[in-house]
Length: 115
Image 1 (cartoon, rainbow, N blue to C red):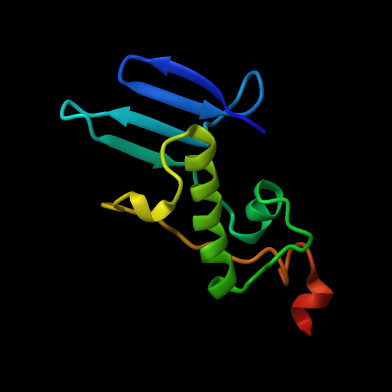
Image 2 (cartoon, rainbow, N blue to C red; image 1 turned 30 degrees about the vertical axis):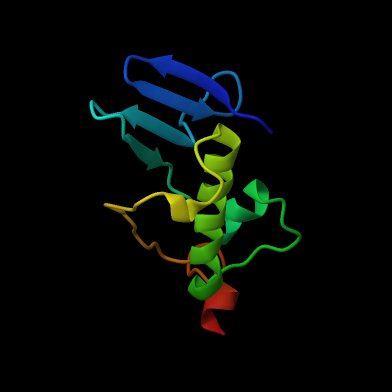
């Protein structure tokens, strides 16, 4: 699905839907012509499944989920017409964090947590 695009000053917002809460990607034009790209955070396999139209959800397998996040970002870059491959951009800074898995959880799945 093609992005909706909103340009405000030196910022360009790439988003889906009519009234988004977050943009998938925000691009900031630098004075020297370079682009500073901010990608939205993803929840690994769950997000990638929808974005990449995958048949299965990968969960709790970082060796699979991390590359899926980069594939999502690459797809966004292509859809925005910024480049054809994620290898064409330089990653200067990446903010990443982990979170407690949803399952097994002592709150939402006490039986599974005991196993």
